[in-house]
Length: 250
Ligand SMILES: C[S@@+](CC[C@H](N)C(=O)[O-])C[C@H]1O[C@@H](n2cnc3c(N)ncnc32)[C@H](O)[C@@H]1O
Image (cartoon, rainbow, N blue to C red; front, side):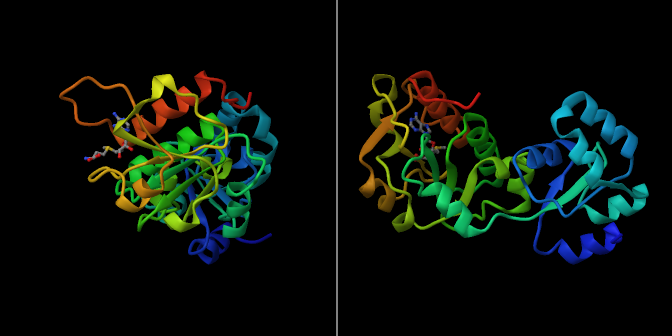
């Protein structure tokens, strides 16, 4: 049997850190390949699995190796209260592009146009997973697989396609760009093949993206408030899609 610490040190540079029980549980549920998983307290981790994830309890039982707490703590940037950590293989760019460009996709793609805040990107990936959208694309320099984004996504990067693309590479579909100056979303039905684009925290939609938009759409907001937070804007828009006929997987 391979020593988990050796395996960890060998794979840490290329794999994605799943920090804590919940991230591991989500990643396993959505089919992530997990070559190594450790815990400082196997009994407590499996008790959590019994309580919160009986569907993947058997897989977690097979994956988790107990190591001393000091060893666990030496493998992660900051120990998690559940003392569970794992490494997962990042899906290939080709696989993500296949999902994003699927001509028969039945749910929108979310585009974050030059986002800056890693926490916002993680929160949006979690939302995208919850609503069953086809994927989250970022433009610009932020890496949507940055460890801080993965931590914010709670292991749900494996439940939706996540990729960085240029504006020229965006998936096909009617482009709805969210902007306070747009048409009121309450009068619109967002189609299932929509590409829903959101601007950066500081400067909003880029000129490049704005020029390509088929529709500019506004979320209701009283006068004198300038804008909503990026992740909450995505939440409201996806909720609107679902409330007007969009099918969230059950
Ligand atoms: C924090 S806001 C950007 C604020 C930025 N200072 C600006 O000039 O637009 C981030 C993004 O959330 C979306 N957003 C925020 N409030 C919105 C609203 N009321 N209607 C539509 N989109 C909104 C837009 O896509 C916006 O670009």
